[in-house]
Amino acid sequence: MWGRSNLRQVDVATGAVLRALPLPDARAFAEGVAANPANASEILQLTYQSGRAFRYGLGDDPGGLARRDGEVDTTLRDGWGLTATAEHFVATDGHSAALHFLDPATYRPVRSVPASDGFGRPIQMLNELEWIEGEVWANVYTGHCLVALDPATGRATKWVVGVDPLLRGPPHSGAGARGEVLNSIAYDPASGRLWVTGKDWARLFEVRLAEQSALGIRSSRHLFDRRCIVR
Image 1: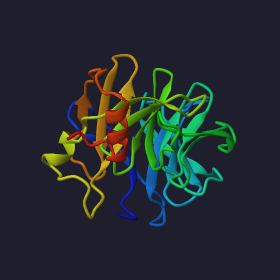
Image 2: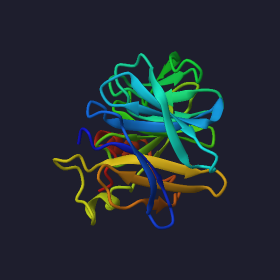
Image 3: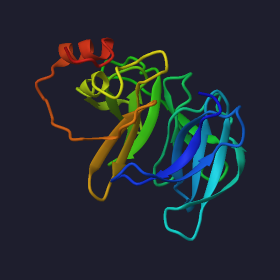
Image 4: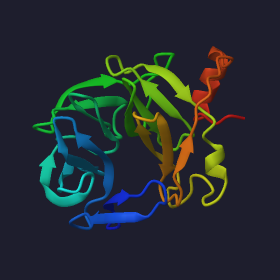
């Protein structure tokens, strides 16, 4: 899929692509994207297997993509997920079970916290990120779940399971040769709406959460070991 990446503005009601900006060369594979917490008119986009990131400026049209403003070096070995708190970008790199907090002015890491589950085990393969109500939410790459992490400690505060039915129906059939896996989270704080989608998914799903306090420690460990697949 190298050379196919672009940054899009999409109508969430219809799925229509309103505007798309391709990446500048075939060596760039787009990954996480987030608005700069220190500059609301700027968007940052990470790239796979490099520390390269691209900056985009917004035009006069609110929310409209206008131009690519240049390239920066995050110094990360890789770029996977990206979101932002009120003060920092938060990124994952695919090589460490950690959240990396980046300065919004220099785009360089200022601190990192290890990500761990409720049993003290590191959570590897943290992928796409989203800042939701004071927590960093992530999907576990190739897993059928989301996890919410405390930004101060990196410890898991909750798991979202039961997402796997989306992987079994059309228009895809789960993790396959082309990487059709759960791989994206979006949240609207104004409405509380939560969406997920994935690699090469033709649809965006709005999901609603229901708390299940009956999942005990044994069940939680089983879910984690089974990549969060509910059976």
